[in-house]
Image 1 (cartoon, rainbow, N blue to C red):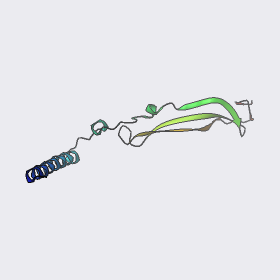
Image 2: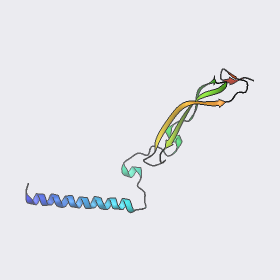
Image 3: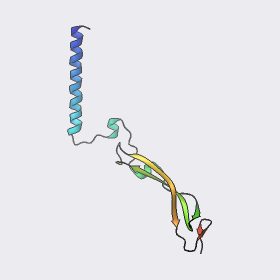
Image 4: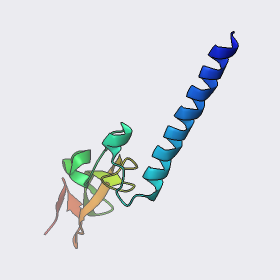
Length: 110
């Protein structure tokens, strides 16, 4: 490698380092937030409805003398509307109604 080529490479590397450093300082010290799009990252969710359905599914059934039904919940977790947001989904069962006289076929008995 020639001395002239070596010097040019060193000068170019130093110039790029300075430009990158100035850019980083600008990002750190400006009050303008950097968006996900600026960083090339997706925003997963801004609200719970972005993550899918939330609600009851399936048929009601009886358990422990009360009415129960499947429930699906979708939640936008993390810092909503930022690159740190993500969707979580949970599926389980919820008690729909307490029955005073027991339960049969997914309904309270009178």
